[in-house]
Length: 281
Ligand code: HEM
Image (cartoon, rainbow, N blue to C red):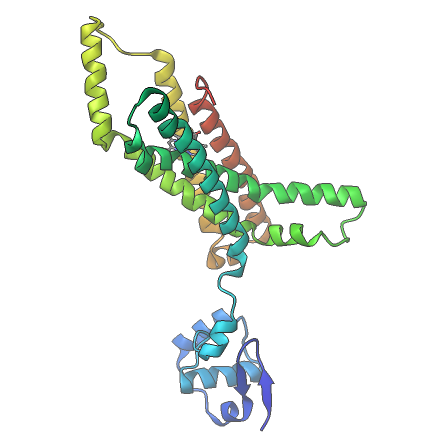
């Protein structure tokens, strides 16, 4: 009996060859799409085995399951996102909640679930987005320094370059959450009370018009830039889905991921800068 070692599972070729492939074009085309194989004897054998025993790529023994690494390419981006989120959460809580509580006995703990979280989310998102494009620049610098493009990159840079897609998708995830949190600001009860208090103070000061021209412009511009930035990030995320990226030529894919990615990073940076143009750090 001849045995062939696959990636994780052992395939019994004789058993496979003795089973006649069925004409099930739907499944066949799916399997071919998944495996990127067409008419080799091994492919036919594997397909027959799959048909006969419902032997899917997820159906390995529990021992083999234990050996498989879970989401290996996501480890580095997830660790970095967790560390930045944690540090940013501590910093913002100390600045916006703990400091006013200690110095002025002001109770601002209500800010934690939305306002503080919505400071953490965009900062993590924009940092991760920058980390998508930084290794490309470092790699170009490395090639210039070594005078050749055929020298291997250091292992850490290699690992970083290979997880750029995951960095980008995580950045998109945080940006989407940030947009949802931001858009629900006016729904909050605390915001309505604040609005009423401002109106009351304005009446007390006998002020008829609260319009501040530069504040109006600032908000119109940064929200608009945020929306365009998020739209571009959505396109980048869609273009990274394997079925979509496989339908693009290398030039198209490179154009979207590089030019549009840099544009998204630029728009998001300007969005944050316009938001903070008259605010202390
Ligand atoms: C629909 C899209 C978006 C909307 C409506 C939006 C809205 C906002 C709002 C309202 C703020 C002020 C938050 C506050 O008062 O604390 C803000 C800040 C910010 N946004 Fe966005 N944003 C959007 C997309 C993005 C995207 C795609 C990014 C980057 C990936 C981003 C990055 C930032 C950053 C870095 C800040 C400054 C956070 C701080 O230092 O407090 N935003 N955005």
